[in-house]
Image (cartoon, rainbow, N blue to C red; front, top):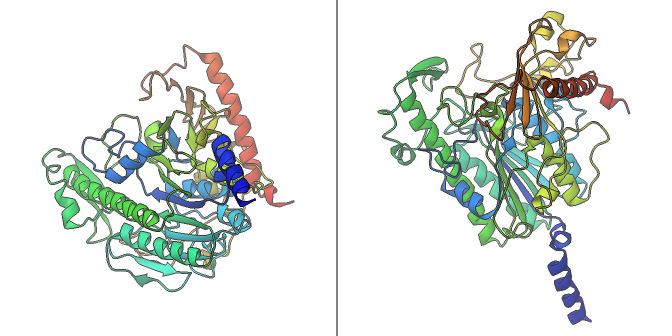
Length: 499
């Protein structure tokens, strides 16, 4: 009988490997901070060294077109956790929290018996224990996290406690904490769900001497002056870009090395085969570091340079051979994809992501639904002065960082009960990608539109505006974009939480 069962299992593995792989894979989701698409060796960057990411790209599933759902960090992180566009929950910009009523990947995976941990940058609410949007409140069993970004020798909060200083390189620190969590989950006989959100390579930059040495030639190559944060004062400073790039790329290389440390531990523990390891960035490259190629735009813009990020999956059991996909995917796709992998239903509310399991199995060649991007114009809320969604005391952060804001070394968060929807709520830079075409709209007022239409297949750098050549297509895309915005604004009022 035992021989027959073994033979049947082998036959199932041969005929339908996805069924075998669907059995509670371990899941690790990694994300860099301000790490744009082009800043990897495998995407042809002329300077930055990322040997570990390059190896994952060469052996796993590489997305040619992976997008952050928003061109800035807090909103993208909200989409990552919920599968929804951040404007649905009022996470409009950096420092805007999500809402306690949102349902996260961690809350879903807990139902399937996963032990869930978060390590590193959080930035969708305070990490302190009393926060209704802390990692613990949003489904994670354990966390060693920061309200925002962090540098060398970071101050982090363990499970919501007072911040403590961790000595060393920050990417290595959060990976080591993740490894301890993974080992404890294994000892408890639990599958693990681990999020590691690095503080690198967000400015201000700082690197270890050995990593800085790799880029000693850059100060002589880039002399233009750029603006960023001073590590000495916490305020703004202007410095030559070559010096800045040397430090930034040192951070990227250190982050890459930390990912390698994690992969080696998985291999040593016999975990690599059945662990889904994912990496992406949270938005495009920041203006101080952008070299202007190959895409148009930077962090904070809905052009490709603001939203395209590295996207990689390594999962030997499900993806045994290296593949590249041109299917356009987004951080909003993570929740529906992981829900499908573990057999849990998605939340009963509007989602903006889709299940990517057909991409994992090489059964999809083109995204069947559009991608939407929208930077909400928060000036409207400044005028309306609405009531807060969460008690402001609960929105105060505790973990210090180098960059000062308003003289403070910590960050507070905000989220509002939205006033009655008006026409002004539709404004702000926004875009839709359907198939190979992308429509970008920039107007702040209804009577002053600026529209651009691009064929991304022929013109990935978004140089040729086709709006006059194809007005009917542009209008069709604009209509779809407007219809989607109406759905988002309904969610923004809190209507999704009423049932």
